[in-house]
Image 1 (cartoon, rainbow, N blue to C red):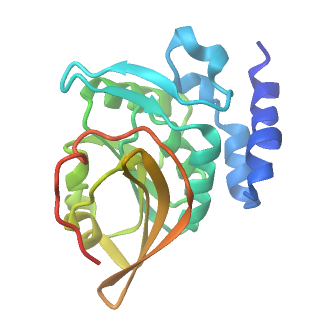
Image 2 (image 1 turned 180 degrees about the vertical axis):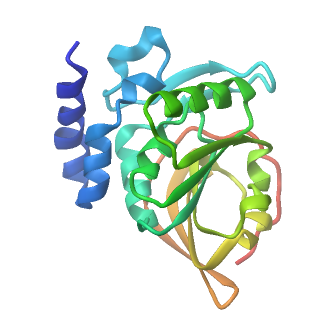
Image 3 (image 1 turned 180 degrees about the horizontal axis):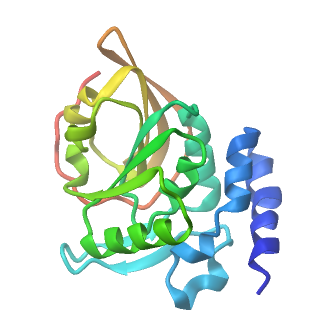
Length: 222
């Protein structure tokens, strides 16, 4: 399979029609080999407009899946990532979102609760020479306080609830993007912190794989 051609086709036929026009993001999507981040048996599915299973976690028994490329691209675009930004990626899984975002930001902290996926993500990022992204492990809903505050928090998946701790880890002027899902319907949210207060707006309709740790009732208020 010609993965390079499939990558270009993904950008042209899936991403561009959704009004994703940021040149740096389109360039990153055109460069990062998504096939390196999927299981070997599914490499030929890497550029299809579908979620891809990464297997069942031995820790919590939950299946982890990669977002559809178009949803990922739209969510990254919504985050308005700048070259000077420090970004926390929550639920980086095999590392694809962290690799793409690392092309846009100054540095990336990629948080993953599944140690096997975290090791895979780290190895792939190193192999690709992406040296401004560091993979760390821990509960996803808690974020990663030791490297806070962040300019952007990117939640790589869907959540039914958010912890206030995540908002507290945003810098002044920081942005958090997430797909919030209720009753099977999801919407991408853009949360902006100004004057210590978080304001929320809805970006677009979206469905994404649910992340572990966000299903429980965690109080969240703006």
